[in-house]
Image 1 (cartoon, rainbow, N blue to C red):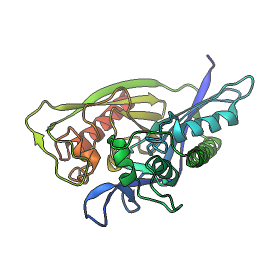
Image 2: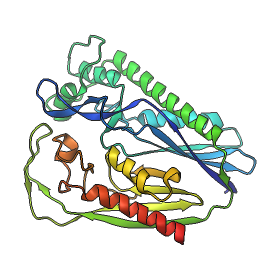
Image 3: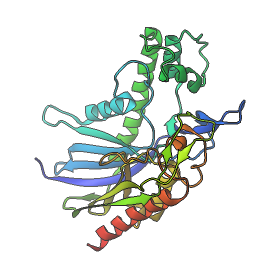
Length: 322
């Protein structure tokens, strides 16, 4: 245990992208790169230094799924592991072991922009010709994901490229984290610490089919309301807001816009358990027949977006007035 001070600052990283798009051949929703879809590229970093200005720990939130090695047969910490390794190596010494953690920001509809090496790895498992050009991942992932093709050892050439890219991606994000930490100037050595949580409650539905995407789903009503736990930890003039689900980008934007501490609110998803909602889409996305919305247990509408944002805003207000 060491006395510490805390600071918060933000940067940006431009290697994430919206992952829900219309297939140009079928006109149906699918999982693919959508360069015009909403995406939040803000990197939020909470830093902890001891009173000799030695970095003890860092907590970063960024909106991107760690899916580069998805279905490859390898257990991997993916790019978050590479990022943590890079940041920890920068600050660790024989007398100081730095701990660098990462959480996902609002990324229910966000993937890495660069998926070529992971897709090539899967293609090698399915004996699909690899040209070197980028290929659409969904058509290659689907037969492996659904068990039509067994998971076998991929070609080591493409596996090596995959993990080289994972390391590069995490390293670049790690350097942005270090840059943000280096430029943080507002430190608090005696922050008031506060915590609170409440449920965002919305109507639910029960799914009756198992279609992946591109078609209308079948559902039953009525069912019990869905509860999504929201939380706030206050640290002086900074708050860490949590949602126990994977929320879409626009909900994250709304939280940042409506919180009373606009420039001092960190967003962390998949926090404090797992809601039964599944993915939580924003009002403009809930009728998309992408896999996240088809599988959601929430009744389509604006309820979840409004309730999640307003509950976090309410908790922040309670922290400010306590």
